[in-house]
Image (cartoon, rainbow over the protein chains, first blue to last red):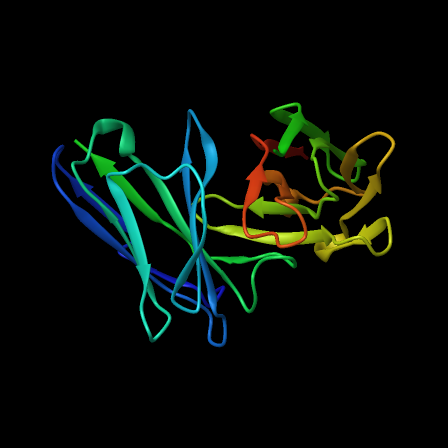
Length: 113
Length: 114
């Protein structure tokens, strides 16, 4: 157990729907990162938050959004889902902003049908 | 912009043999470099990291990697492979020293043969 908790572990939903993925960072970690892992694109950085503020943005679609709450948990919202959004979504956390490697959660596997 | 190339999407070694997984990077700023391992149905686990201190970095499970600036390489090695090393390995480079964003290579699947 890495200490980073992601729920749910699996999610199956239909095209056009909206889902929310949740991440609880390790105790004491202030920074949260979201990554998407798919067969065709590999691991892609989506977005990073530090103590509630957005700090870096990667290849995140406009249909996707995220936030980090005062208790430091984070949610990734995916809307108007398409078949191509099927992937593993990982959350990672670190005490400070990057620099020394993250701790990853075990991921949420999203299947869009 | 950063990029990472992992040579060989699949590598097979015999148990007890040397493991060598190759990683070359491109970065416009001094990089931090990382190796992660992913076991089936699990998240990524940090093996080791280079953050501009010693160029030879030792990690967990007997792995080590050497940063060679002249070759822009950060190859991962282990002297003697164990069956438990079978997994997918990812090399990653940071977006500079802030390392807010990691760019990952496409991964190398390591198979260990008995």
